[in-house]
Image 1 (cartoon, rainbow, N blue to C red):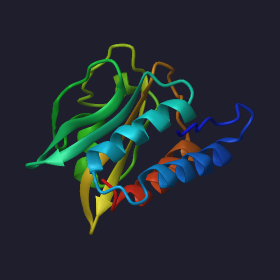
Image 2: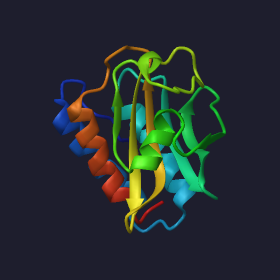
Image 3: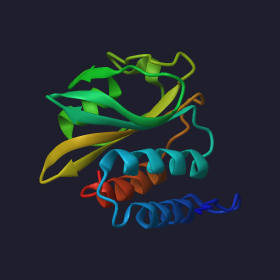
Image 4: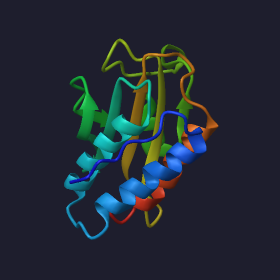
Length: 160
């Protein structure tokens, strides 16, 4: 049985170190990418306060397709280049959006979302998925969040 619970008093940097360590422990030796994404989505939900959605979109046939997540039902397909997730997939760069309503072409899957962080998962220089985090709080994410999830994405490169 796994019981990964962060201490509420941890700094963001330490919280993300523990999240990465837990993700490493859960995915090491498991070859099923969907199972690994499902466990990671659950871990993110446990480790990152203030979210209303956390999960993955997978690159399938040139578009992003919904993967394992925690939260309300979501958009199933997102064209590359559209919305925050599509921008991350097109550029291969993290998208840290303080106010999603000010983001050109934002796709509102959940009207409660106010800020978003999307981190691409790369393999051999190509986007294979994105980690998508939404919060109902404007400006919820910062550079520590982005760095923490970029480290997690690098771990997942060969595990999803």
